[in-house]
Image (cartoon, rainbow, N blue to C red):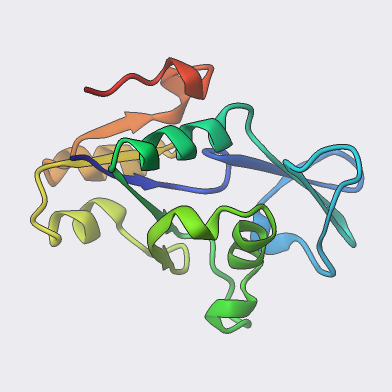
Length: 159
């Protein structure tokens, strides 16, 4: 079975401020509420976060096939404790916590390739949008997929 490790910002969701400029989830302020228009859209006091199309179905399929889903993000802020991090609150509100086996939420200095290599798991599939993190994972022999290499989550196929 595969162990999927997914980044958050620009990988499974996209967040925007009130003017439509893309921001990191950690820049959004609560309270957070699910939009009346879509269960995949969270309204923040200063913006919005939208789950990418097909992500929820990817989570369902992955779990149904007994693979693990894990989050690894360098999107933590320096102020809030873990349970109060905007990214954690968004995962919870979107109903994605129940699919998670592990959540690694640290600050920007996190080297994801190094972290994942220490797990000694040859079945890791790492998905991220950041070319530096992809390069790092390749340097540490962790299989990675650049989020920019596919348009739709439904096109990801795994045996």
